[in-house]
Length: 153
Image (cartoon, rainbow, N blue to C red; front, side, top):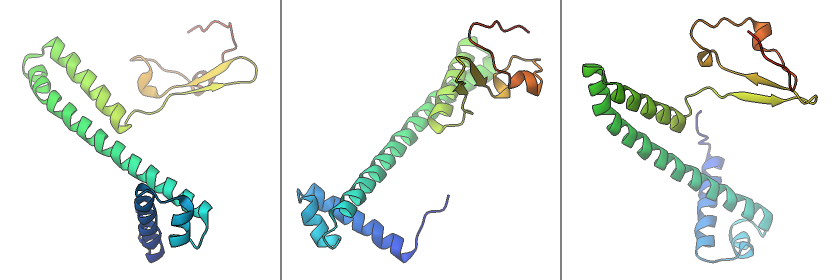
């Protein structure tokens, strides 16, 4: 997704950063609003909250990147050992690392569980979650099982 870079977007971003800096310097929202927002305290508060959220998201992304790098470092020797010797423990370690890495990066397709008004539920699963050789028709895959009803195959 491309980031907005129009002059008005750049100006708004700079104003949010300045407002956040002033807030960190212990100015009140009204003082900041008077300086940067023509006295509009509501817009001042919203912009400061946006700036805080953006900084938090950036910090989370930095931590995520560091964790992924660490997982990559941990995986290298395990991958080598698993491929060269077929060691079961190394294979399992690699799989656990891959699983954690996929979670950090959001690579796994989400599983959805939908509550119905009748007390039953429908479970949506991705095809990779099915056992090898399973062949569900579209009707079976989208069926609803009522509460207490047994599932048979």
